[in-house]
Length: 134
Ligand code: CMX
Image (cartoon, rainbow, N blue to C red):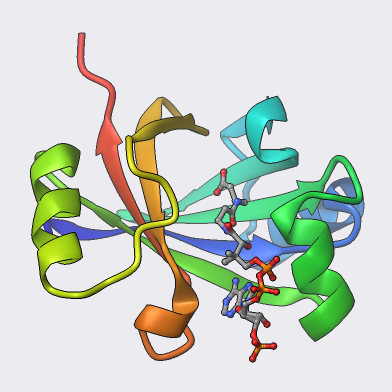
Protein backbone atom coordinates (compact mmCIF):
# COMPACT_ATOMS: atom_id res chain seq x y z
CA UNK A 1 0.00 0.00 0.00
CA UNK A 2 1.30 3.43 -0.90
CA UNK A 3 -0.51 5.87 1.39
CA UNK A 4 -3.87 6.85 2.86
CA UNK A 5 -5.65 8.20 -0.23
CA UNK A 6 -8.67 9.64 1.57
CA UNK A 7 -11.00 9.38 4.55
CA UNK A 8 -14.71 8.98 3.77
CA UNK A 9 -17.27 10.72 5.97
CA UNK A 10 -20.98 9.84 5.74
CA UNK A 11 -23.26 12.89 5.90
CA UNK A 12 -27.02 13.40 5.73
CA UNK A 13 -27.00 16.52 3.59
CA UNK A 14 -23.97 17.10 1.39
CA UNK A 15 -24.85 20.73 0.56
CA UNK A 16 -24.97 21.65 4.24
CA UNK A 17 -21.85 19.60 4.97
CA UNK A 18 -19.97 21.21 2.07
CA UNK A 19 -20.67 24.58 3.69
CA UNK A 20 -19.62 23.31 7.11
CA UNK A 21 -16.40 21.66 5.93
CA UNK A 22 -15.56 24.63 3.68
CA UNK A 23 -15.63 26.78 6.84
CA UNK A 24 -13.55 24.20 8.72
CA UNK A 25 -10.87 23.92 6.01
CA UNK A 26 -11.24 27.51 4.75
CA UNK A 27 -11.51 26.22 1.18
CA UNK A 28 -14.15 24.82 -1.15
CA UNK A 29 -14.33 21.22 -2.38
CA UNK A 30 -12.30 20.66 -5.55
CA UNK A 31 -14.74 18.16 -6.97
CA UNK A 32 -18.44 17.21 -6.72
CA UNK A 33 -19.38 13.87 -8.24
CA UNK A 34 -22.38 11.52 -8.25
CA UNK A 35 -21.54 7.80 -8.41
CA UNK A 36 -24.87 6.21 -9.37
CA UNK A 37 -23.49 2.66 -9.14
CA UNK A 38 -22.65 3.25 -5.44
CA UNK A 39 -25.78 5.29 -4.70
CA UNK A 40 -23.75 8.28 -3.49
CA UNK A 41 -23.23 11.95 -4.06
CA UNK A 42 -19.66 12.90 -3.14
CA UNK A 43 -17.45 15.92 -2.64
CA UNK A 44 -13.67 16.04 -2.22
CA UNK A 45 -11.52 18.45 -0.25
CA UNK A 46 -7.74 18.59 -0.57
CA UNK A 47 -5.93 19.43 2.67
CA UNK A 48 -2.21 19.51 1.98
CA UNK A 49 -1.53 16.04 0.60
CA UNK A 50 -4.64 14.54 2.21
CA UNK A 51 -8.14 14.15 0.85
CA UNK A 52 -11.46 14.08 2.64
CA UNK A 53 -14.50 12.64 0.84
CA UNK A 54 -18.01 13.52 2.00
CA UNK A 55 -20.71 11.03 1.02
CA UNK A 56 -24.49 11.47 0.96
CA UNK A 57 -26.84 8.62 0.00
CA UNK A 58 -28.81 9.13 -3.22
CA UNK A 59 -31.20 6.26 -2.49
CA UNK A 60 -32.42 4.37 0.60
CA UNK A 61 -30.57 1.15 -0.43
CA UNK A 62 -27.21 2.94 -0.53
CA UNK A 63 -24.48 1.72 1.85
CA UNK A 64 -24.36 5.30 3.18
CA UNK A 65 -28.10 5.39 3.98
CA UNK A 66 -27.81 2.09 5.91
CA UNK A 67 -24.67 3.29 7.72
CA UNK A 68 -26.29 6.56 8.85
CA UNK A 69 -29.47 4.77 9.93
CA UNK A 70 -27.44 2.39 12.10
CA UNK A 71 -24.51 4.49 13.34
CA UNK A 72 -25.33 8.13 12.46
CA UNK A 73 -23.07 10.52 10.56
CA UNK A 74 -19.31 10.09 10.86
CA UNK A 75 -16.19 8.42 9.50
CA UNK A 76 -17.32 5.69 7.10
CA UNK A 77 -14.13 4.31 5.52
CA UNK A 78 -10.37 4.66 5.08
CA UNK A 79 -9.07 4.41 1.52
CA UNK A 80 -5.53 3.28 0.72
CA UNK A 81 -3.88 3.92 -2.60
CA UNK A 82 -2.28 0.86 -4.17
CA UNK A 83 -0.02 0.46 -7.18
CA UNK A 84 -1.73 -2.63 -8.62
CA UNK A 85 -5.25 -3.19 -7.28
CA UNK A 86 -5.67 -6.70 -8.76
CA UNK A 87 -2.42 -7.92 -7.20
CA UNK A 88 -3.33 -6.34 -3.85
CA UNK A 89 -6.83 -7.89 -3.92
CA UNK A 90 -5.32 -11.31 -4.57
CA UNK A 91 -2.76 -10.86 -1.78
CA UNK A 92 -5.35 -9.71 0.78
CA UNK A 93 -7.77 -12.48 -0.15
CA UNK A 94 -5.01 -15.04 0.47
CA UNK A 95 -4.32 -13.34 3.83
CA UNK A 96 -7.96 -14.03 4.82
CA UNK A 97 -9.61 -10.62 4.29
CA UNK A 98 -13.11 -10.62 2.81
CA UNK A 99 -13.33 -8.71 -0.46
CA UNK A 100 -16.70 -7.09 -1.10
CA UNK A 101 -16.17 -7.19 -4.86
CA UNK A 102 -14.29 -9.86 -6.79
CA UNK A 103 -13.27 -7.47 -9.57
CA UNK A 104 -12.18 -3.84 -9.19
CA UNK A 105 -15.04 -1.43 -9.87
CA UNK A 106 -15.17 2.20 -10.98
CA UNK A 107 -15.40 4.59 -8.01
CA UNK A 108 -15.39 8.36 -7.57
CA UNK A 109 -12.43 10.61 -8.45
CA UNK A 110 -11.11 8.52 -11.36
CA UNK A 111 -10.34 5.41 -9.32
CA UNK A 112 -10.66 1.65 -9.55
CA UNK A 113 -11.81 0.50 -6.13
CA UNK A 114 -12.41 -2.55 -3.95
CA UNK A 115 -13.81 -2.64 -0.41
CA UNK A 116 -12.88 -5.10 2.35
CA UNK A 117 -15.65 -6.18 4.74
CA UNK A 118 -15.28 -4.39 8.11
CA UNK A 119 -15.85 -7.70 9.92
CA UNK A 120 -12.52 -8.95 8.51
CA UNK A 121 -10.60 -5.78 9.49
CA UNK A 122 -11.44 -5.04 13.13
CA UNK A 123 -14.63 -3.11 12.35
CA UNK A 124 -13.02 -0.69 9.87
CA UNK A 125 -14.33 -0.47 6.30
CA UNK A 126 -11.21 -0.38 4.08
CA UNK A 127 -11.17 0.77 0.47
CA UNK A 128 -8.34 -0.02 -1.92
CA UNK A 129 -7.99 2.39 -4.79
CA UNK A 130 -5.85 2.72 -7.86
CA UNK A 131 -5.78 5.75 -10.11
CA UNK A 132 -7.22 5.00 -13.57
CA UNK A 133 -4.21 5.70 -15.76
CA UNK A 134 -4.24 6.83 -19.38
N1 CMX B 1 -17.69 0.76 8.99
C1 CMX B 1 -17.69 -0.15 9.98
N2 CMX B 1 -18.67 -1.09 10.14
C2 CMX B 1 -19.69 -1.05 9.25
C3 CMX B 1 -19.75 -0.11 8.20
C4 CMX B 1 -18.70 0.82 8.10
N3 CMX B 1 -18.69 1.74 7.12
N4 CMX B 1 -20.89 -0.34 7.50
C5 CMX B 1 -21.51 -1.37 8.08
N5 CMX B 1 -20.80 -1.81 9.13
C6 CMX B 1 -21.10 -2.90 10.03
C7 CMX B 1 -22.57 -2.99 10.40
O1 CMX B 1 -22.85 -2.09 11.45
C8 CMX B 1 -22.70 -4.45 10.81
O2 CMX B 1 -22.20 -4.60 12.11
P1 CMX B 1 -22.98 -5.50 13.20
O3 CMX B 1 -23.15 -6.86 12.57
O4 CMX B 1 -22.06 -5.51 14.39
O5 CMX B 1 -24.28 -4.82 13.43
C9 CMX B 1 -21.71 -5.13 9.88
O6 CMX B 1 -20.85 -4.11 9.36
C10 CMX B 1 -22.32 -5.84 8.69
O7 CMX B 1 -23.42 -5.20 8.35
P2 CMX B 1 -24.46 -5.86 7.36
O8 CMX B 1 -25.82 -5.53 7.84
O9 CMX B 1 -24.13 -7.28 7.09
O10 CMX B 1 -24.15 -5.19 6.03
P3 CMX B 1 -24.56 -3.76 5.57
O11 CMX B 1 -25.77 -3.92 4.71
O12 CMX B 1 -24.58 -2.79 6.68
O13 CMX B 1 -23.33 -3.45 4.62
C11 CMX B 1 -21.08 -3.29 3.98
C12 CMX B 1 -22.05 -3.25 5.13
C13 CMX B 1 -19.72 -2.85 4.48
C14 CMX B 1 -21.00 -4.72 3.45
C15 CMX B 1 -21.62 -2.34 2.84
O14 CMX B 1 -21.74 -1.04 3.38
C16 CMX B 1 -20.72 -2.29 1.64
O15 CMX B 1 -20.80 -3.15 0.77
N6 CMX B 1 -19.85 -1.25 1.55
C17 CMX B 1 -18.97 -1.08 0.41
C18 CMX B 1 -19.51 -0.09 -0.59
C19 CMX B 1 -19.67 1.27 -0.02
O16 CMX B 1 -19.48 1.53 1.17
N7 CMX B 1 -20.05 2.21 -0.91
C20 CMX B 1 -20.22 3.61 -0.56
C21 CMX B 1 -18.97 4.41 -0.74
C22 CMX B 1 -18.62 4.56 -2.21
C23 CMX B 1 -17.50 5.53 -2.47
O17 CMX B 1 -16.60 5.75 -1.63
O18 CMX B 1 -17.52 6.11 -3.60
